[in-house]
Picture 1: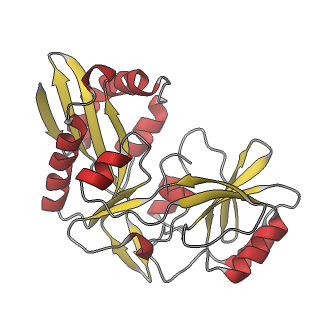
Picture 2: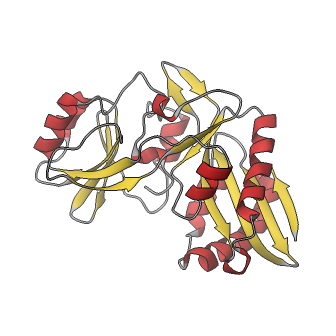
Length: 266
C-alpha cells in the first residue's frame, strides 16, 4: 500500500473521481460532487490536508481536514474541520485510519494549524478519542423544541455565547462561503440562520438569545445543545459528539460554541 499526503487544492483535484467512488463504497450513498467542490476546492480559507492510501490503482483509504477558522472578539484561530473519513470495507481493521490521520495532523501542525475539530461518526470516533488524543466533552444533543420552549430554555442556559470561539457569520468570507453549500436552502433573519428539515426547522446558527423571537411561529425547531445543559422533560433529542485535537494551541472543546454550521453535515 502507498500513502500520499496532499496539501494543495491543485494536487487534490485529480483524485476527485476516486474519492467520490470510495465515499460511495464506504457509506453506501453518493457524495454530490458539488458538495465536495464546495468543501475542498471553493473553500476560501486555504488548502486542505488530505492523506490517501492506494492498493495498486485502487484508492482504499482517505482522511482529510479543511481550514475552518473560528473567531472570538475579533480574534480568529487557524482551526481545521475533520472531514469524510473513509476506509474501504476490504481494508478496515488494519489501523489504516489512525496512520493516515497522524500524517495529516503532523502536516497541519507544521503549517501552523491551531487545532482540529469535528463531530466524528461512530466509525471514526473510537480511533480519534482512544488512539489519537482528541479531547471529548459530554456529548452534545440535537434537541427538538417548540419556539416557546426554546425561548424559555434559552433564558436559563447560555446557548449562544459570544465569550467562546464560534463561526463568524458577520458580513465576510466565512458567511458567504458557508451559506453557499450546495443543496441547502438556508434562510436568514437578523442574528439567525435556519433551514427546513421536513416539517421542522434546523436552527443552524444564532448570534444571541434575543433573536429567537424572530423565528417563524408554529414550527418545531431542531437545535444543537451542549451536553453540559440538562434538557427539560419531554424534549426529544439524540447525541451528537464533538471533539478537538489541540495542535499549536491548547483549545478545549468547551471554549468553542457549537452550532450546526460548525458541522459539515448541516
